[in-house]
Length: 324
Image: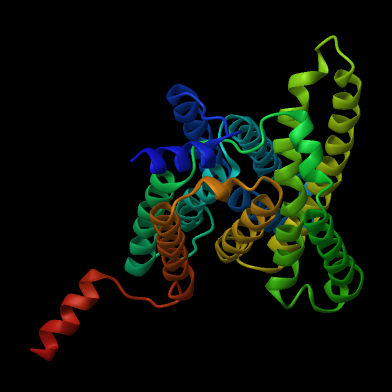
């Protein structure tokens, strides 16, 4: 027993466990933000469709601007959530926005949502609950000094170089030729940029804690915060551009669903390399998170892959009666 306790203490050394109130607040903000973000693609798509009918730019459409404002509000909410709880706890909750967006799209855009789509919505929500239960609740990086050390880690620097190279290839060579016909091109660009936006958001929250302190580290904290803000701003602008390009060419709910899976996977990978939040996760919780993410992904597949199948419970009952 003593050995197990010592091992647990060693595993948790240097990790900060937020208070239950902070975790609850962070989770609440993350859930609301995911729902708001789930509406953004639908509202922006609706604005783009309305603008095309009028033969004008979508920049003049009030519904598109409503979606853009909703996106800004959702991102601010995510920023607040990332400063309160670990990244691996916040990011997967974006799944809640997928069923919400699909339901909203069925009303505003008249996109189909059959019985399998509704089952997918239920699975996505259930998987999100499993993710919440098993995600780590403690922070592995709690100070500016730790953040600087992690940012200069050769493994993370190497990962960022690979991401930058892939982004350059996608933006300047692949997207102009294949972007309008292959949804994965725009999704890959936006998702790879998540490797910068989410760690930058988390880092800004950590660096901001030391900016207003009257000590030598405050100047370094300010410089770090400004650099991360610049990276975050550039990433968001590029993401915003390619999200709207994708919405001009593809179904909003299909884009939102695939985007969630790819974005979440890449963000969790970047966060695992940078923040090492997985180091405090036991085998049971790791398997629980894997099952939760799989459940969410299956739910999203049900929402999207079978959306063109035009059947409901009434038709299924009629088919069973004919068979009998």
